[in-house]
Image (tube, rainbow, N blue to C red; front, side, top):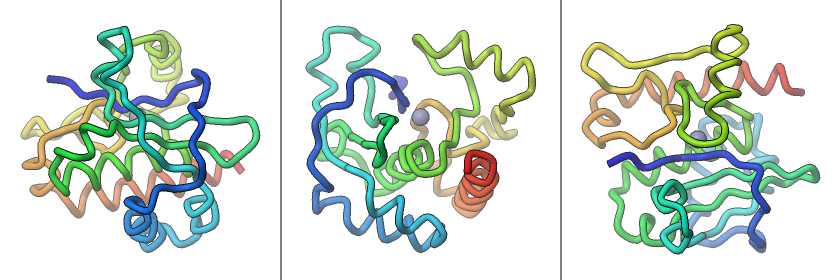
Length: 176
Ligand SMILES: [Zn+2]
C-alpha cells in the first residue's frame, strides 16, 4: 500500500488559519528549524477528505502542500488518516509536508502522477538529488514520496531528522 505525499498546483482548498490539532506539531517544527519560525507559524493547516476524490491516485493521498503565489502556502492532511495513524507516522507526514511548504524541499524519488516526467528530468540533469534507499530498504530521506513504516522511522530517527534539517537549510538558502 503506497500512501502518497504530494505537492500540487491544483486549486488550493479553502483553509482558514490553522486547526488547533496542529499547534504542537508546528512548535516542534520550530524547535527543529527556528530560522523558519515565522513561515511555519503562518502556514494554513487543515484537513481534506482525499478519500472522496474520484481518482485512485488522489484517494491514496495522506497529505499535500499547496504552493500559492501569495504566501502563506497551505498544507492539508487526510482526515481519516489523521484519526487513525500512529503518532510516529503523523509526525513524519507532518514534517514531510512542512518540508515542501516551508523549505521548498523536493521529493527524493520519482512521484507517481503528473510530476513524474518533470522529476525524472530534474534528477537526470542532477538539479535534484535522488536519495534512494538505505541498505535495509528504508527510504534514505523523509522527503521520499510515499509514507514508510514506523519501524524505519524508529530505527533511523536521528538520521531522518538531521537529513530533514540539512535539506531544508540547503533548499531555503537557494530559494531565497
Ligand atoms: Zn511530498
